Amino acid sequence: VSLVKTGLAAADEKPGCYRLGPAALSLGISAIEQIDGFEIVRREVTTLRDTTRRSAAVTTWTDDGPISLFKQDGDQRGAFEFRTGLIPMLTAAGKIYAARMPPNLTTDLIEQEWSAVFGGRADVGKFREDAIRELKRRGYTTIARSDLSGYVSIAAPVLDWNGDVRFTL
Image (cartoon, rainbow, N blue to C red; front, side, top):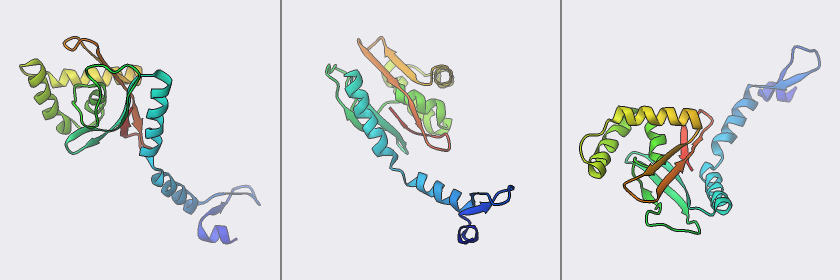
């Protein structure tokens, strides 16, 4: 009776049976929101590095663009190692943000980097559409830069319970 009065339980259609009530749902959502997502993905970065022996990192979106929060170096370090701090949009992680973030947040960054790296004007719409298609088809994105010998990056989104990108690995 006390659980029903507080909303933690509710009477079921079948007499004598109960189900979780609306207060239990609110309590569960509150608990989910308190999970330290960063700590979880940080552990996954270490596991990914240990499994693949390659460098791995976690990124998130900020007002200034994508930022690498934590990285673990692999056994074979190349000339183009991932770093912590702001990272380019022209990476696999950047492609995920281009695919999933509102265009007004990513367009200028893509155009600036494209101009600096390749010269000329970027076809941001094509870049975004290609990223969306690849993410939908594979569940992750890749970049293999022919102008930077040996540079390859792969990124997968980490979604929150709303389906929004919270991090990339």
